[in-house]
Image 1 (tube, rainbow, N blue to C red):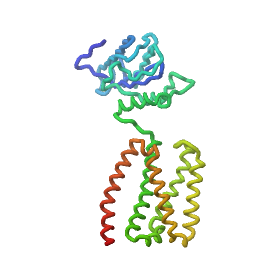
Image 2: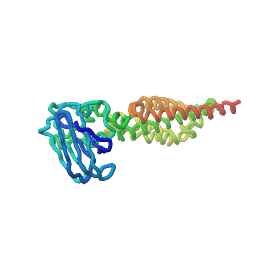
Image 3: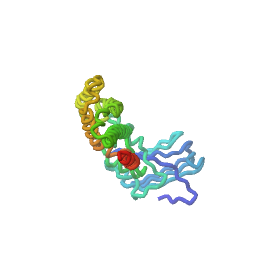
Image 4: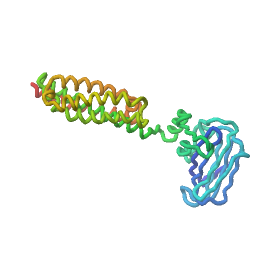
Length: 304
């Protein structure tokens, strides 16, 4: 294998694969005098070009994790990059490109090509995230140090967090009022937390759209019936009838709704099982604990 001197530079190399080929994208522009040497388990490349260190001579050598067919491999040089196509002798997904687990710092994963390898299968677009999610997640963690969450999961985590905070706010305010005034606080429950309850109730109509747009599984009918039923009670039977707003039943209704939703939003997988959701939930728990220490005790002292 090619031995590199201390002054030899290596370009950034981005790799991807399908079950039959592995591709290398060498990040060199204006390439001149390229040299490629391919054996069954080794790839050696050198060329003059513009890389991360400017116009210089770059080279690299790779000892592959599995055998390839040198006769079927190809080299394509463009103004922006150099593309190498390595044909595998056996169809299989490699767990990594190099034979050793420790990969060079200049070797990166070409996530764009992992997503859609159209050049090698014109009839069907391959998606490793769907076909081999375990391999993709492992490669992503090795490359980035963490698993990237999709925008959809991040949105759902944030939505569930906001709803969790909203219903927690209703519970906390009702608790403080009841702790200070006892049963007398029930009469003013709607005036105190009614606007917040109306807002988070309207936000829940988004849960009807989530399955329609593929954000969650299941039918849109179930959340539609649930959210619409609550909206009728809240806006038609309570909001439109001022005499109902001071009844104790409003207190108990809001209490039951809020307790159910606080538990439900912490159990939803897109909130509880994502990195973003876990961090946010931990942060919110800390904030809520501090609020409890600074707010509840003064109210308790004022009572006496």
